[in-house]
Length: 170
Image 1: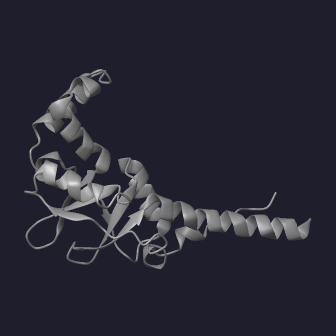
Image 2 (image 1 turned 120 degrees about the vertical axis):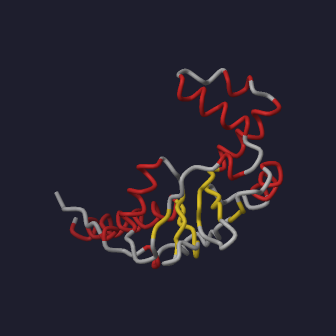
């Protein structure tokens, strides 16, 4: 069996973040969730919204699903209540229903430097159950966005190269 190469361990984020060319969607923490859902709907390829302070530094992230829940929960809470099964989920739901701004609904920030590897980006997204990650400069200002699909494309390219090499040997 051929050993699978692992170039993602060495591929910098800066070399792959433009595969899908998804621009980061950034909102200020005081943005109303209703205004935010309209901004996000106008840019549906972004799965993770970056929340920034007045200096443009990343202070949190807001998965699109969580934003949608904050809106739906106000109108039809029963649509979400029926899926809750433990105290932690109920507490999170309560927090989501009460959120009026994206800052109130956001999660702790998840980001990565452009010099970090694709492997690091994937591990960070995976550990936080996020489908995207913001690429930030040394001052923690978002300069890009790396989507989980971009990471998967890097790995798909590797697998296709391995498959072609194996086919040539056969």
